[in-house]
Length: 207
Image (cartoon, rainbow, N blue to C red; front, side, top):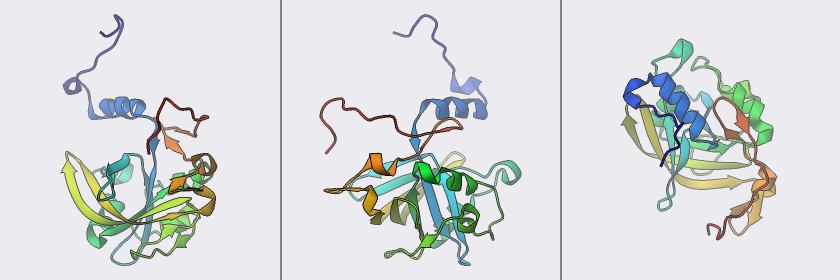
């Protein structure tokens, strides 16, 4: 039973922005997908997205939700979505705390011809299974090939099949596990960011 002083909001009574604020302030913390892509003309793009999760274990598939452009590019398709749709390949780089400022720089709205690796101040690293570079400084990078794009309202769910995973040796704990306390993932909150507090167990761990 809800508490006597609990508040309730009906989606039909709220503006899109107000419902968005409730969702991003409640569905937390969210991992950040730092997506590197490339245009048909060969221009590198790098942008962060926090609507991101695992979609399937078999085949290994990651899900990314991409909305429309904002501010001066409001209502337009984001370069990342255009590139993924046209090229069919991209990388999801994981963001550590130490890469927070670089990630934030890459979130700026810039013209499609701008190389955002240069804007962020990070280094492209060639991939093996796709022709899009990963971020050299990222502790983990997933090389992906596009599976499908699903329209949901104004947003697009991008499903990508994992072809290869790059993991920095310092971020690897052995037995196909990552040393989370070593690579220190950065999480997205409601406009702010957070690192990890000391971890604790609630019973049997996931295998």
